[in-house]
Image (cartoon, rainbow, N blue to C red; front, side, top):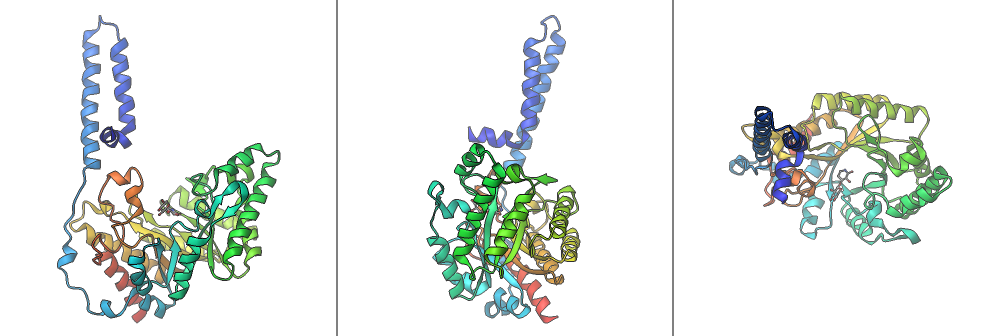
Length: 407
Ligand code: XIL
């Protein structure tokens, strides 16, 4: 069954056309046999096309790992990414999942970490009806970060996309049953931010206060925006500022196309927030490369525009799906070049203070669990491969930092 879905998955419109043609064939009067034959033939051709396209999309690929035969500069053994970034006063970070096998490498290579999942509402708020929190895992990660001189970014307070993970389902019932939805939502947001930020106050210097507010050009229709409109963003930032006035407050978003309608709409949103005096300090550009290779010139212009609004920028969730470079001669090298360019763009703009990689090794990467990408292997979006070899992505980042440090 799964294979059927894989074949048809994204080609749902083909299925619709085939079904329509077959239905037409079924009901078409029998006195027109030629037309009926044509309907049947067309649906057969489209079915075949769809299967071929599906096979091409989902057939696993393998690319040569030329990097395994290349010599690496000797200095990378003695000078880590963290050493280079420290010298530039720049953050180089990674999404942290509890895996003791990687902890010493993380402590060596990074000066910043983001809990991949353990600071999300779905993990912290274990019993939403009774406002019971479990901070133990997040505390552990933070203690590890502090013990190794790494900053921890807080990710994330308010996020409305996947009920359960990003906010408890009970909140939906509570909001639906409330006579004043706005007031009830404000109370929930306030209590949540006060509890969570309050718990980590003084130890987490930067928080993503709101994550992924957009859907295309508009606001994502979450319980937050449905009950408060855009104001839920303002409100969350005001509460956050009150709870921890020394913390840098970020709005974090995945921009698909910096020059496109979503990118433009997000800039306009930032402008409105600044004009309304919302206490926002910075913008997190997630930079997941899932569907497309981001245009780094457009990214450069985008960061400049955000800087002109008086806001800081960080690249907060960088990863690059290998298969996007499937047509290149050396896909691993092309992937590495893209990592390098993104880091360079950030290093070149004084508003941009750091880059966080969303994952360490290709062995555990979140894209392998997200449909339909989990069926389009290899995703391999990180800088160490499954065997912990440094990929060209590592060297690309290392070179970008090294060049910036020696300039
Ligand atoms: C992802 C994690 O990496 C996965 O482990 C989890 O199952 C789903 O969330 N944008 C974000 C991140 O802001 O929090 C998401 O992290 C990736 C997309």
